[in-house]
Image 1 (cartoon, helix red, strand yellow):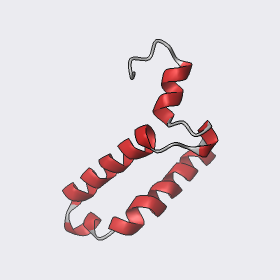
Image 2: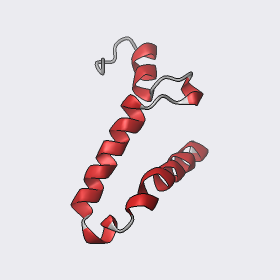
Image 3: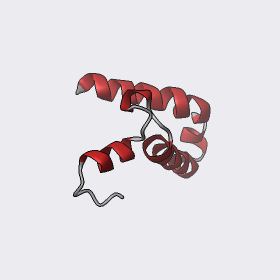
Length: 70
């Protein structure tokens, strides 16, 4: 579990925080909005190679028919 969390933290750092670091000090509300937008893109729009080019949301829906995310 820890390697997965560390990889996710690195991805956030490389794809979001490094580009918007100044907002952490200047405009936290805007940084939080960009973070929320990035999380939606990462989980629901962007396909992942490790998930056979599916999004995490697609994998959850496909593997759990009782899931109401669909």
